Picture 1 (cartoon, rainbow, N blue to C red):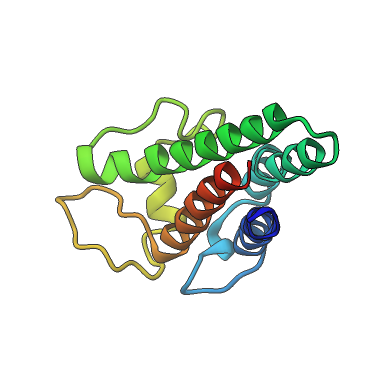
Picture 2: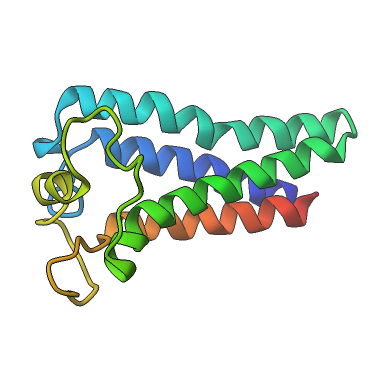
Length: 153
């Protein structure tokens, strides 16, 4: 289970980096994201997404299960943040206050510019931003990684 958890965590990081930096339109829409937005997203999220692998590995090597639990907790918090960012506006019509912190735009504006024309399989709910397929896959991988991380501990 440890190997699976580590592979999933690293798959999350790799998937995130590719979909944030490589134009795979219409799967993603990197071409309409500002370079500064991409840099900020990678600088903040990639280390947070990778840290559970480090903690889980150290926990195993040092025989400190607390590090594994910290890895699982961080992975669970990351997936919760992603779900709140993407699913709360869609399902509840509310945007997380930190959704576009420092970007100078609203979540609806950012979504309309960078995600609205990507592959989306969910039905519309009024004019609410919908999670796109790219992020639905990311959130599924993140959830699987969190569950496997706890199972590995």
